[in-house]
Each structure stands twice: as structure tokens, then as C-alpha cells.
Image (spheres, rainbow, N blue to C red):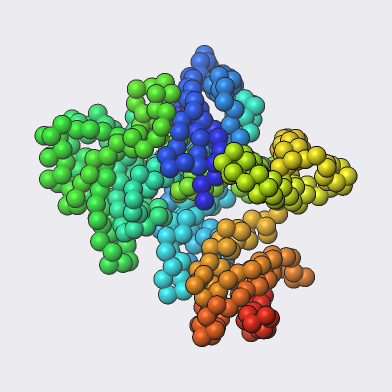
Length: 497
């Protein structure tokens, strides 16, 4: 799901600072604002404060304030390894990745903050791309942001942002594809498998060196492709190589393509964004990592999270959850307005407006059950939930400032959207009508989900139950309870998460 939000992204590049605000949620991201600044200092001991001052100036120039800020780090400071974990399940894999990665390191793993992205599952095993970033560098950058008054809620890599932009520009993402992203100071080679980032490494040439000797650049890229394919345990062929960040002349293009033994496509990722005229530099590609990381933070692409463990942001996840709920309220208000002006039948309009108001109040009451406004009850003249929405906004802003902590156990649970997606796949709508879904805590370590359904195809009951037992998210142990009511076949089952 792409959350519709205004997300700010910060990138600290040596003494330079970039800040971009991106509107997400649409088919293409929209750049609302972009500002850059450079630190000025006379002595190295003054650098941290100078960079913080530059960031303070760049953020201070923003007029359209974002809902949250994320940090874009360079993959040049990261170590990555494709490893295979001998079991499935996000929680178990996450616990095992640091131990699987440690033998490949030449220094203690405690110096890194580690995250991973799942590539594929084969024969009960999970192949992942494990990535570690120096803890000291992340702490330094977060400290600079704190000094500038900027609260960083998430940290991702530039290669993840670039991969997100590339994936969003394509109609189909299936198969194995390679990319070379040329930036102002270097280049990144990456490989995606379906929608997952499977491999990346920093290249030595720049756009200028590419134009000077495209054959040498092609040989380095071809060596990277061979190195990746040598360890890729699959018969999936490499379908193509996309080169971004440069538009070479025909002679350079031919010199490059003649060496690379894969079909080559040159692509401008800047065409997939709106508002490029907001960017203060002529080189749009220099801003693409930040834009992509903003899109990724909204749930639209490749995402790593290095704002974790001791570096975890206080209340960061709570802010994202509240923003998602608040966005849902705004969507309901838009629907109410649309219905009010477009439907001719006045009584039907009022009934739908009342229903929307009730839904808004229900969301508000469930989100802030201890609020005095909730305890005193809903106002009688709250037409369409407009007054409730204003109360919701006030509570949201106060809670965002206060922050909160969420347990690791909550973060390890599958999100609601994954649960609903799994139910839609295991309970096809032509055979089953889902009438009620309840998610509740259990007395043990697991959450429980209770689902009530109407069976439309009685012959498919055994097949449906067998499919439920094969689910990777829902663990159904007991036979569903069946009953007959008013000529309908009903059944209810309970599963643990």
C-alpha cells in the first residue's frame, strides 16, 4: 500500500545537505519542495555544527511541512551479502540474519546495524539480501539531525530509493533485471528479482569517466554481472540491463552495448516524477535517491530500516500509524462531500453522511479510548463527523509531539493489510462471502483472528479448509464450525498469527 502523505527526506553528502518534500500516494510521486545547503567551517572540529546549521537552513526554507522526515544514506558505507536462511517466517529470519552475516565480516558485527530484504523462498528456506551500515556513522548523522531540530523517523539507503524509482516506472517487475545508476559522484550496480532488491555494489566510474571510456565502464559492469550470476542459484536469466543518469551519444552507446552481453536500455528516471522544476540543481538524477526513499517510506517500494535497536526513534512507528489513520479520516470526509453534492436523493445523502460520521467516530473512539471527548460522547449536531475529525486532528498532533514506544513483539506481527490480503487469497469471493473479521489478543504469545463466512459453494468447503491450513500467516488448527441459518451455510474458524 502507498500511504498518501507528505514525506521529507534528508541526505547528508560530505559537507552538502539536500532536503526534499515529496507527496506520495499517486501513480507518480510529486516533488513539492527541494532545498540544498553547504556547510562552511574553518576547522574540522567545527564540521558537525556547521553541517547541522546547513541542515537547519535547508529545513527552515520548507514551506510545505512534511508529516515526517526520513534519512537517505549512501550504500557506499554499507556492506551487503546474499545469504540463505534455513527456514521461513519474517520473525525467525530477522533473528538469524545477523548470525548468518557475521562470518563474512572482517570486523565485529556489533559495529553494524543490520537489516535485510527477502528475495525468495525455496524448499522451506529464505534467500535474503543482508545489509549492514556502520553504527557510528548513523549515530553521527542522527545527532546532526537532532542538533538541527529534525526528527528522523526512518533510515534507508540510496540504492533502495533508486530501485524503488526504477520499479515504479515499469508495468511489470517479474524476472531478473540489472541496473546501473550513474550519480554525480559515482555509480551503483544493482539487481532486482521480481519486486525485491537481490544485489548491489558500488562502481568506480562516474558519468564523466563513462563518456571518456564507455568500453572500460562496460567491462566493469560485465564483471559485476558475472560475479552476481556465479552465485545466483536459479535458472532465471538476466533479462536486461537498464542504465540511468546519462544520455550518451550513439557512438558511446554502441561502444558500451558491444561489450555488455545483455540487452541494454538507457532510461531517464526523472520522467516518472512530477514537480521536477522544484529541484534547484540541473542534475535531477542527484535527487532521485531522496525522492525514491520518500516513496519507499510510504510503503511503495524497496525498504530497509536502520533506525532500530539502540538507534530506534522514540514514537516513530506511532507517528506513522496515526498518520495512516488520520489519512483514512480525510478520505472518508472527501467521500462524504462527494456523496453530498453528487447524489440527488436527499434522504439517501443524509443516511450516507450519517454512516460516514459514525465510521469517523468509531475510528476516533478506537484510536483514543482514554480521551475526555470520547468519554463524554459524540455531539448531537456532529453532521458527517466534521467535529469528530477536528478532535481527531488535535489528538493526533498532541500524540505526535508526545511520542510513544511500541514493543518489538508488535512490530514482528504481520500487519493488518497482509492479514486481509491472505484472507482474500484463501477465501475466494466466488465461493465464500466473508461477513466478519475479528483480531484479538490471546492469553499466550500469539494474536488470534476469528473469521465468520457464508459458504456460497458447499462443494468447495474441504478445498478451502485445506488452503487455509497451508497459509504462511494464518495457523488454523481446529475444523471450522458449520451451521445452517435461513437456508444459508455458515461457518466460523479461528486462527493464530
